[in-house]
Each structure stands twice: as C-alpha cells, then as structure tokens.
Image (cartoon, rainbow, N blue to C red; front, side, top):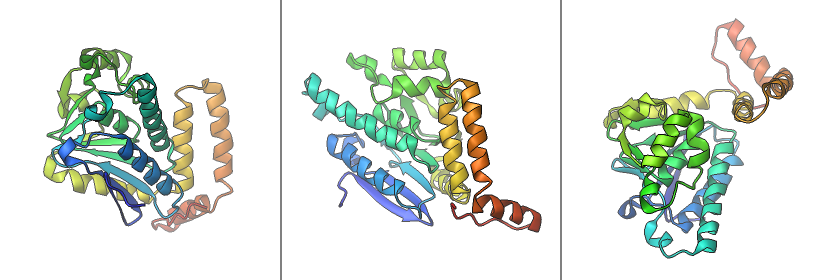
Length: 259
C-alpha cells in the first residue's frame, strides 16, 4: 500500500512513522487514520522490527483531528471517526514492541492523545502540548480522558482537560507527561539512540513487561502478580533467557532472538 499521509521507513530494525500532512499541521483525517492502522498492523507482524518511533516535523508533531473534515460530521459520522481513532490508538498501545513518540512543535488534541499510547515520549525544547477540545464545546475523545490520568495523575489530568490550556515542554516534563526534554537539534539523535537501545532488548521479555504493566492499571494486584509469576516461569523455557544469562557470565553482550 502506498501511503499519502505518512512516511514509513525502517532503519536497523527500527520502524519510523512520520506524519506527512505539513500543510494541515499533520491533522488526522479518516484516510490518515486508516493508513496508520495499516502500518501498525504491518509492524505488529514483522518480527524484524524491534522498536518503533513516531514523529512529525520540527514545527508540529500533530494538531489532532482535521477540523475542516470533522466540522460537518453528524453524530453517526463522528462516532465512526472516533471508532477508527480508538482502534488505531489501541493497536499502538498494545504493540509488543517498545514505542517512542518523538515530539517537536505543537502536540495538541488527538496528536497529544496518540502520544499517550506510546511507551515513552521525548520532547524538543520547542514542543507545546495541550488538549484544547473543551474550547470547541467538545472533549478529547481519542483516549485522552482514559489515558492521561494514568500518566500524570487525576488532579493534573482534570486540570489540563477542563482548562484546555496549552503548555510548554518544561511543564510537560514537570508533570511526567514526557520522559525527557532536549534541544530541537538533538531530538533525532536522542530518539534514535534510545530506539536502538530498546531494539537490543529481548523481545519476549519486552512484550510480557508491556502486557503486565497494562494489567497493573486495572487488575487486582493479587491477580496481576499471579500472571506475573506464570509469565516469568515461561521465560525460563526461552532461548533468550539462556542467552542473556550465559552472556552475563561470559562478560559479553547478549544477542536476543525473541525465542
């Protein structure tokens, strides 16, 4: 499939998805959501991909829904749009591979919500964040009401969603929305360095960690630790566990294969 709204590439086992609607501030229309869903499915099924980077350009990560498309939607049409946004965001969130949002410029509305589905967020010092939907008479319906509080806490999440305020990268770091802030000219290098580091981790363990940490958000701890125990035992039948421990005692770097 040829993509019109995103640029997809691979580099040393790292999948790179770049939003490519610069004249529209990388706003999400239906076609773009469908392309993102397709490329995420491709990444999910490609064992050669070990990590994922999602980015925009230096001026804008993504500005959310394409209002020129959405403004004339009726209830059923907007429900379909949100359903596609939810499906794509959930697919990103559920990927067994580590994901990084590399954020420069404006990261607003649905763009901010998409970044919440990533495991980590690295921001440039020119990044600006916000969920301003309340000012349009609506609310962030791309998963923001569900995921933001799990990252920054309920009090801060309520403040950001109810006020619709726009804030800078330092504030984002302060509240725990992003993992790191770097100068704009260092964003690419910092992101790819982290992606390469993550790509060398054991795929089986990475996938289990992501799944278990998701469970921790909604399962009773007794049930969560029971699942943790079983998955840990399964890893002791894996080649990656054998390789990791053998490499440790031999004083070398392990070479994991996801088996």
